[in-house]
Amino acid sequence: MKNIYFFKRYKVHLFPAIFIGVFSSLLYFNVFSISILDKNIKIKYQEVVDLTKRFHGYYINANEIQLDEGVHEIDDVGIIVNKKGTVKVLSPAIALLRQSLETVIDKKYIWTVAVIEKLNDEDTGNSYFKPLRKNYIKFNDKSLHDSLMLDRIIELENLAENYKGFHSDDIKVTEVYKEEWTNKLIHSIIYPIYLDRKLVSVIIVDVKEGWINGLISNFNNKEWLFIKGGKGLDIFTFDIVLPYSSNNAIYPVSIDISNMFISSLYLSTIINFAVYFLYICFSRIKNKLRYDVMTKLYRRDYYESKLEQLDSAYVLMIDIDHFKQVNDTYGHDVGDCVIKQVSERIRAHIRANDIAIRWGGEEFMIIFPYMHMKDFFNKAEKLRQCIESELIENMLITISIGGVEKKDSELMVEAIERADMALYQSKNAGRNRVTIEQGQYET
Image (cartoon, rainbow, N blue to C red):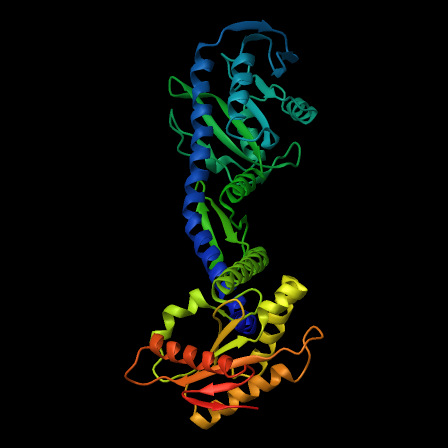
């Protein structure tokens, strides 16, 4: 058990070490994962872009119908017709596009999927919305029959710069902005459709501001990370360049140090308790292998192989007198109590570095390293006296002792044999006495 007390004493140093290790590991893993998060976000954007581009073919090949000026709804897609005439049937394609987008973007973040056509002499300048909000209708009323309706949308939403340099396959992602019509914070994925090198319409996928944070949250949950959108401590803030954005728009992300600190404390506490629990379990198993359960002395099968490592030693063999008579008269339970109390008294009268072993049922061996012969005999005599000085289970219990000094030239097993012979001399001489080598000492 001394090892456990040692562990308890120094466990205060263990916890900080575990915490530093956990916190450092989490910090390194989070910083390392920023590049993976960056790649994941770019992949998500690319998937959205790829889905949006597919609409181009649907638009070019769509069927046409005649509709009057006004607001119409076909298959849950709102259509604002600004001039009576031919209108493309885009509802199935827009519905399919939104359904496809929901496999990439959580549907709670999809704000609007829209197609805005340019009003000119050949076209009716229609607008398609899923969903069609009243705000869009009001805005359209103000701009009715405006041949530059698409350009006005661009101007009102401060997106003009994003349209510069468009090509037939160009696509742009805006930074977060406030939609003029609804005051909703969004960023838009805008894909232009050209016919004969002339811009005829744009597809706009409006995504709510929280989408990137949602991606970050999902990434955190899968990897147990502490990354958040927005700036934090400068040293732990990183910039993610949004793909397809004008002027390489930046989305800052940072390591949430406070939450990481709290989680590290929590995890370190669990690990600390787990280590302590495992140490206790290990110590108990180890102690069962080392120590006799009844007497708390060393087990013979554990220590016998280690005896030959001892150089200088004084050996005592101790046997409880008339123990078989105690068992036969009072039973084995009483006999066990006698053994326990004899063991307790032996442990109480030896030094911390002395070795006490339960050698047999009622037989014990004590090894004293580095002791003078006179002290050796006095110690043996005190052990004999402490046993007979007080009754055990209302009985006078005595012990017989035999002792020897191990010679430099002999093996430990030979010294034990000589100690056994001295013990038998004590028994043959009447018990309750100490025999050292060939000399007998009676009380």
